[in-house]
Amino acid sequence: MKLEPSDLFLGVSLGLLAGYVDTAGFVALYGLFTAHVTGNFVLIGTELARPSHGPLLLKFLAFPAFGIGVMLTRLLGNSCERSGTQPVRPMLVLQLVLMVAFFAAGLAATPIQHNEAPMVLVCGMLGAAAMGVHNAVGKLQFSRIAPTTVMTGNVTQLLIDLADIVTGRGTPAIRERFVRFLWPMLAFAGGCIVGGTAYVQLGFWCLLLPIAILVAMLPMRWPEAKHAPA
Image (cartoon, rainbow, N blue to C red):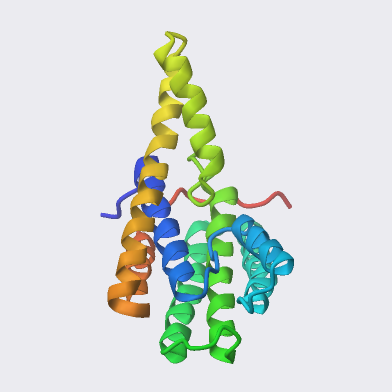
């Protein structure tokens, strides 16, 4: 019997995966954020203001790669909608393929000695594309759970709700939302700690864990898709 993933399972699993991959990529690829673009904007601005021969090209290339991942996910979802196919599994397969390619490119690029080496650039782009898919799936299919990549909004909402709860204004809906946002945030934080440590100890072999998470999610039972109107 196939298990249907709960929202708690999704929030924890996807939050852990995002924090893990983002931190492993950051440690491996000269400070590249693969799971979100905000940090890369800041680092590009810093490098332009105070040039230090940092990985500027790598961070610039991450933007179109991330965007391609997002757009491919959207197009895949549109195609599934037209055919009446449940889109979650194909989207996860797309992320899995890109994650495996990220893993293989990382092994090929090892030892990483220059931030503009061709395989290093390919590795960074594949990682950003994989996490672009991750972000798009979250928006398109898992919008009912808290975001599992960028934690600024999550922490802000948690603190707003916490202030209401401790002052006696915490309604059942506020308490439910607090829990819903808490677990992905904790999972992301734990993923960051484990991901950085795992890369230091294992190199790109550490990516086998997020690959395994995606593989484990594929056979799960997802709601049946509705056919698009003719």
